[in-house]
Every structure is written in structure tokens, then in C-alpha cells.
Length: 546
Image 1: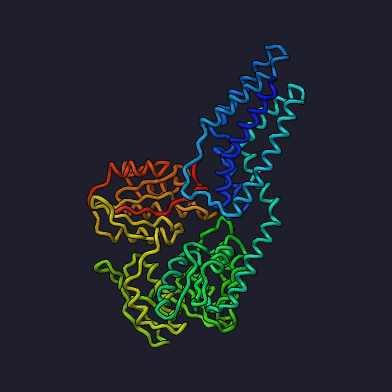
Image 2 (image 1 turned 90 degrees about the vertical axis):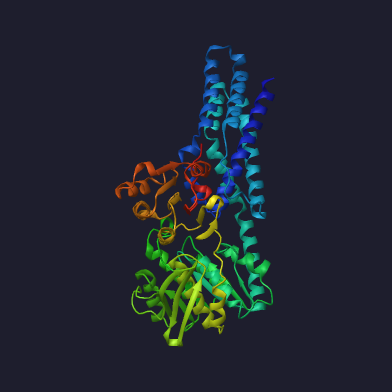
């Protein structure tokens, strides 16, 4: 009669695998279904051996130990009972962290979960038969071993399902791309490609806003900056009325931007920056630059490339593009270019909630006074690039300048929010690169405030420069802030070191693990007139598990 008890244990195990599998699938989806990234995430000790699993293992091992002093006929029932008790403890004590970005049940996600479920059920069936049929000692080892390996097995089932579905997913992707290519050829919009380490999303939206005064323009939405995201935009949103298509492009590896360009065939390239974003994946800044340059390389000869030239790496791409026969327009802040600039923004003044500057393009005889209701030097650069594209496509600079006065910030990117009780929030939670972080601190320093407060988990995916960049962030924050709230004790150690190195008082530093703790702390310290900068918000893949 112990067989039903074993079957119950197998079902309880399957139920936990299902719970864990949903978390794993969510992380896998966030990581763009990249197996190596999921494996990297799953290696953390708090995933492999969470406290709940430790408690379950203890109960199961105690049951196995008891079998050494009881009659052999009752050993398997006791082991099965201990296994059920251990699994029940795992279920009750284990908590999947709250999702900032929930699993989206796309057709691919549903196929993946279905394939993983088949593998898990087969594994449970094999396990049940093996535990029942094997000698008792081996059965005990199997029960304890499988329980211990459960988190790793949840990952294995998801990866196994993904591997099994690869031929299917390839066919699906090819079909979507083929459909999108046919639609592009039929409608024939002028495509503006936007790439860079930072600034590309805001530049895309501003460019589309300016061009809309000239012709019907479609930008890729939100951060749809992968091949499949662009394909989906074309298939779902591109219409005959759209004469211009502004496409944001991002890459986690070589060849990705090239594949996007092969689909959309851009007529104009905008390169906003070259920096250490995703350095962890690319290993070197030169590799990042090469990936971004794939956009320029896809252009027809003599086609225009609008390239930021305010730093050496970006200016190097401009020089390469010019040498390869492209029409290069270098832009940047006046007096801060690495070499001559074709387009400059200077005379920056912030008054009455507006950032005012002079946009000059001497070769075109253009000098315009521009006012934007956006914060930060980088937005001046984003607007400058958008004005250049507007001129290149025959739009009205005057109309674009007028439209600039009503620009709205991209959500979560230096978005100014008037909070309750006279508190001002600067939401910069989607900025995760060094330039964006320091721009945010510059904006915070310019605010008229009773107290300036920074809330941040720091920066990730910066590879070998991650610690040094985070320490530099801490040093800068010490010069600007009256209080700093650090989210995540592990990730923020370099920021803490930077704060201490700059002499920032320890009683004005708060280190916590969750945004709920941040909210509770802010309630106790905020007063009317305070300004709070939320700088970056780490994705679920960096959550600390229990």
C-alpha cells in the first residue's frame, strides 16, 4: 500500500517543479531565451539550495535515518512518508519572488511550458518506478538526490523543452520574418535605424515626433529593439500610410544588428553612443563598437550616417564611416567633440522648467534656438540628432523646433513626477549605463530641493569595469546627495565603497534588499521640498532569492 504514497510524493514533486518552472520560464523570457544567461542565473546558491529546500531535505534525511532501526518491511513506507513531508515543507516555505516583469504567455512561452511539462512528467514516472523497484538503499539515495537536485532539474526541463522545440521555433521565426519582409517591400517606407549603447530609445521617439510633422511616421514601440520585436512591429503595426519607419536596434552579440538591417534596409543611420553597456557579454568596448557599426555598414554607399562624436570610441566610428564613403554628420555638445563637429548644441540654459540651447549646422545654414521640457544633457544630444534626421528627410526644422517645446520624457527615463506631500520624483529607472547615471546625478544637483535623495541598485552587465564604475557612481553621489538608499547589499558594495571614500556620512546611507523596504524608509525620512532620484531598476534576473 505504499505505492499510492510514492505516487503522491511524485505528484507533490511535480507540483513544485511546475511552480519553479514558471519562475525559470520568466527568467528565460527576460533573457531573450538565451540558454547561457539562464544557466548563469541558475548557478546562484540561493536558487540551487534555498532555505526551503534545506528544510525539506532535513525532513527527508531524518526519515531515511529512521529506516536504519525499523523492520525492513516498513522502510519504504517511512521513506515515502518522509519524502512527502519534505516536499510539503518545500512547498510551504518556498516563495517565488514578486515579479517586476511577469511571464508573458506568448505562443512561444506556451509551447515551451508544454514541452517542459512533458519532460517533467516523464521524469516523475521514471523516478516513481525506480524508487519502487530498486533496492532500498538505492531508493533512499534517489529520493534524497532528486529532492536536492529539484531546482537544477526545473532549469533542465525548461532548457530541454527549448532544445526540443528549436526546429519549430526556427520555422516560426522564418515565417514571421518572411511575412515582415514582404510587407516592407509592399509599403516601402524610408527606414531610419537608431543604435547605440545609450540614448537610442529617447532619440527614436523624439525623431518620430519631429518627422510626424512632415510625414506619417511609425517608431518601434517601447524597447522592441530585437529582430523579432521589429518583425512583430512590422506585421502588427506598419500600414500603407506610414512613409517613415524609425527602428531602434540593440544587440547582445555580433551579427544581431546586421540581421535587423538585412530585414529593414535602413536609408539613414543614427549612432547615439558607444559605451560599456553589455560589456559583460561583449568583453571589450571595441566589440561593442563593432556591433553598433553593423548599422552603418548596412547603408548604401554615400547614405547619411548621423554619429555622436563627443567621445573617442564614437568619433572613431564616424571616422571609419567617412573612410568607407558614407556621408557623415558628426554631432555633439559645443566644445566637447573629439575633433570637428558638423552639428553642435551650445549655450545651454535651464529656466522656467525648460532646457534652452542653440542648435547649429553651419553647412546647412541652420541656427535655431531650441527649448525642450526635458532634463539632462543627453536629451539635448537626442534632440540634436532628431533635428539632423528631420533636415535630411526634407522636414521643416521650424516645425520640429516648435514640436520640441511639447516633448514628453520617455517613461522611466528622467521623468519628472510631482509626488504627494510636496515631494518631487525623478524616475530614471530605465537608465542603466554610466553616462545615464551621472547625467541623472547632474540633474538632481540642479534641482531646487530641501534634500536630494538617491535610490539605486547600481549598474550591472559592465564586465570588468562594473566595480570601478559603481564606485565612481558612489563618489559622484557623495558630492550631490543628502541621503542614499542602496537596493541589494551584494550589488551595491562598490557604490558603498565610493560613498565612504568620498567621506559620505554612514548615518545617511541605507542598505536594503527590496523596494518595499525602500518605500518604508522613504516614508520616515521624506519631507516637503525633497527630490528623490530613482536611478536604474534591476530586472528580475538580479533578484536575490530566499
